[in-house]
Length: 457
Image (cartoon, rainbow, N blue to C red; front, side, top):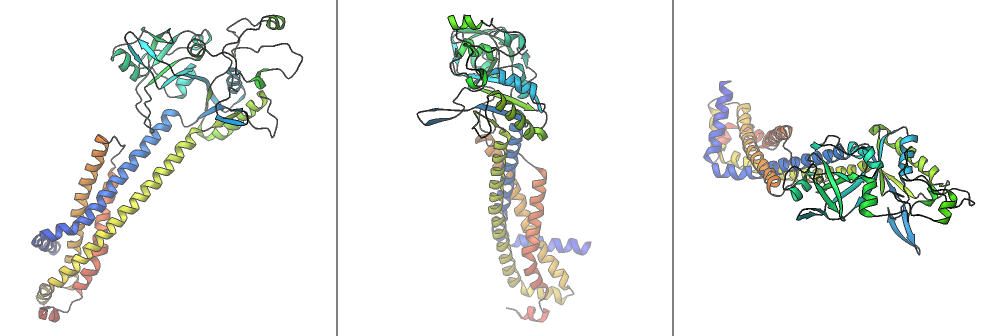
C-alpha cells in the first residue's frame, strides 16, 4: 500500500513540474467530457418532455378526423369535410368494446372579453366532460367542470386555463365571473390545473373548454349545412326530408317535426356535425383493436362499401410522438459520436505527451531502475500519470458540461435533465481513456534497459 501511495505521489509531482503542459494535455478530455455531459442531459431532457407530452395527451388516445372535401377536382385535405356527427360519437361509445370513453370536439377562434380586457385563446374547445378525463384534467384547481346536463341544454358555462386567469383576471379568482365570446356571456365555473408548454412549445394553459353544444350554437353559429348526409339520410329515396335525431341519447334538445311538417316548413337543424372525435382506448395494448373497431362502426354508419375511400381517418397521435422520440435518439447518438471523436483526439494527445515525457525522463527511469525499481513500478507510475490527467480533465469536463446544460435551461429554455449515471459514466470513460492511451508509453518506459537509459543524453 505504501509503495502504491509513493508511486501516486511521484506521479503527481511529475505532473506538477509541467503544470502548463498537463493542463493543455487535459484540454481534449475536457472538451470531450463536456460534450458528453451536455449531450446526454439535453437528450434526457428531450425524452422527459416527450414522455410528459404523451402522458398529458394520453398514450391510448385516438383522434377521429372527418374526410377531405373536394371541389372541381381540387382536394382540400383531411378534416375539411364535415362527415362526423354526434351520433357517430355515441355509436363508437356503444359498439366499440375497446373504447373506454369518447368525446366530440368542436372548435372556435374568437376573442374572449372580460371588462376592459380581452384575449384570444389558442384553443377554444367545445366538448363533453369525458374530454377532460381523456386529457388528464379530471380534477379542477378551482370550481368544478360542467356536466352532461349542461351539454344537453347548451348552457353557457366554461372552464378556463391558467393563462386566461392571468390575462383576463390578473390572477384573481374568476369563479362566477362572466366572460363574453361573440357577445354571448359565459359563466366561468372552473379553473384547470397548470400544465405548461408541451414539447412543441404550445401553451397548454391557454385554453377555454365549454359544452360543445353551447360553442357550436352560441359562438360559432354553425348549422347543418355540411352534415354527413351519407351517415344520416335513409337509404330509401322515397322518404320526405326525414331529419335524424339531433343529439344522441334519450332526451332530445328539440322536438322532431313530422315528415309533412318538415316538407312544408324545413328548418335548419343545429348541432349537425362535430370537428373531430377523441376516443380513449382501455389500454395502450388494445389501441390497434380500438382503431379497427372505430373504422368498422363508421364504415357501417357512413354506408362505405368495401373498396370505397373512407370519409374519415383514425389517427394515433403517439405514433407521431414516437417519431419525434426516434429523431431525438438519433440526434443524441450523433452528438455522442462527435463527443467520442473528441475523446479519441484527447486520448491521442495524452499518448503523444506521455511519449514525450518518457523520452525526456529516460535518465530518471534508468536511475530508478538502477536503485531497485521494477518494470511494473515504472509501468504503474506512468499509467497513474495518464489516468490522473484524464480524471482531472474529466472533472473539469463534468463541471463545464453541467454548467452549459444549466445555461441552456435557464436562458435558452431548452429542456435538460441531469443524470447521476451519466456523470459516473463520464468518470469511468475518463479513466478508461487514460489507461487505454497511456498504456503504450508506460509499457515503453517499463521495458527500458537501465544501462542504456543512464547513458541517454
